Amino acid sequence: MSPGPAPVASLPPVDLTAEASYLLATYAWAIDAREPSLFSRVFTADVDADYEGFACHGLEELAARLDQLHHGLRSTQHLVGSVLAEPSDPDRAGVRSHVRASLVADGGRRLEVAARYEDELVRGPHGWRIRARRVRGMWMNGDRTILPWMSHDMRAEQEIGRG
Image 1 (tube, one colour):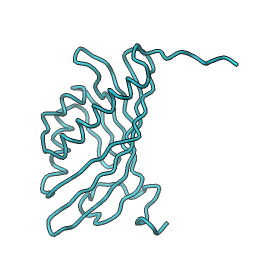
Image 2 (tube, one colour):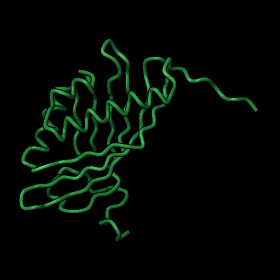
Image 3 (cartoon, one colour):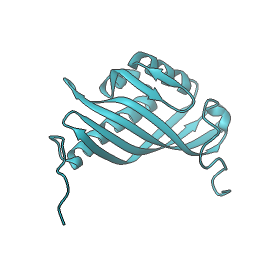
């Protein structure tokens, strides 16, 4: 039995996963702390992002759209985990992760969303950045009017505990 092909990237997958985890944590803090300037540490200038209900091309468009979507919320918390990086060549990798976002609006209205991020990372002069992102919703629970753009064809459409 052969041991299989060796990783292509110069970083072992565990180190690459740690790099990706750092990017994803920076992204979560940028949203939750309302610091869109941090997005330049996470995404390439020409990022392509598909969030199911909307798509953006370019860092400026993405930052503006994310700011608009979260504007008016009292608080948000994005928890990212289950990060797994798979190198495809020394300067490119695919990264999968899960996110659970809690969003609180005025009047105590709440929405919890679980989704999967599918990111393409590239290594450039400033380190690793996300070049492409696809967000795939898994479930949501609570007041859906908080994120009216969210796709309604999610795999588990029902409220938690009803499916």
